Image (cartoon, rainbow, N blue to C red; front, top):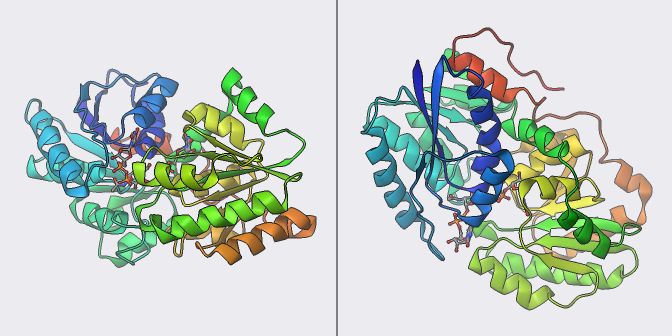
Amino acid sequence: MLNILVAIGTRPEAIKLAPTILEFQKYPKDVNVEVCVTAQHRALLDDVLINFEITPNYDLDLMSKNQTLDEIFSRSLAGISEILRQKPFDWILVQGDTSTALSAALSGFYNGVRVAHVEAGLRTYNKLEPYPEEINRQLISKITDLHFAPTLSAKSNLLSEGISNEDVIVTGNTVIDALRIASSADESDHVKNVLEVAHLNTKIIMVTAHRRENFGRPLESICEALKSLASKYTEDIHVIYPVHPNPNVQSKVYKDLQGIKNISLIDPLNYFDFIQVLKHCFLIITDSGGIQEEAPTLKTPVFILRNQTERTEGVAKGVGLMLGTDKTNIINQTSKVIEHQSEYQKYIKQSNPYGDGLASQRIVSKILHQPFNEFVEI
Ligand code: UD1
Ligand code: UDP
């Protein structure tokens, strides 16, 4: 019997690890899977756990308002180490590039527990974008024993950094597994209300923005662009913007965009509701990592509010566009697809470079020494 601890801190980690936890739970004779939430996020995280009906075994309850990177990291490291010392875990499973993921990986290393990293090998090689995630994930790769790379290009990054071929498995991204589960959920009353306000006959644009490197002037420029677009296309578009609870985001977005008729500023949607709303969207404008991966499955074009992305496959396939945060560029590129169907259609492609919904099965098979085939891009 293997003992595995899964460490989760934030919304995207919960979304991307939930399908793997559920998959492990299918093998109760072979594996004891336990979940530790640091609760680097609270409400955002709890919403996901409720969606997937996952009850954590350990809850460090760390979140504080406007928490600093060093504070969350050090408290998470100490808390996870305490758990690892209580029981002989064989593996600690971490995901992505958050403060929780790095501290959990380091805790595994300090306590002699092997580290498996889900979504390994994403890189921009610019240590300031995304900040601090680029450095977090590079450090996690140094510590990790088994790397689950979502794509071939993520694997190539790891190999070029000297990681051994047999320690890297290409799985596809587990977010596609999660998306499939969420897609089959029923449309809740809350989703119906959100869509009703947005009037189904208009083009709905989903916006999310929360990245640290976009705080200040870039977020201001994003808000100015949204305001202009809303006024230019009053009858044609409706913006739905679930505002991240980070106070740096909340204060700016509500100050600049509240009270505009065709912009709905709403609380973050739980994951299942978010996916149900996304299904009705014409376009997504976002700085999120996970949403870039989900968009091709939903066949919705995604415009990326970043200067660099580690999810290069979507842009290369033409399902996404690097928009940056320049106001004029956001307005011009978005206007183009609103006004010209032919411009819009360019982004609708059949291919999905990020996964096939079987990533969690591959991860579990690898750890349980069962046969499987690696992910091949669709
Ligand atoms: C973190 C991750 C980032 C990920 C993002 C997902 C790191 C270094 N970064 O961003 O990769 O894209 O989460 O959203 O770990 N808050 C609440 N309620 C919540 C969640 C957050 O009030 O449920 C507020 C708190 O004031 C908190 C702040 O948001 O201090 C920011 O949360 P934090 O985990 O520090 O976010 P980021 O580091 O920006
Ligand atoms: N998401 C959600 N509700 C929302 C906005 C986003 O459930 O209101 C989901 C989204 O589908 C994606 C994930 O949250 O899977 C992305 O999280 P976030 O943008 O916070 O982090 P990132 O992906 O940038 O690390």
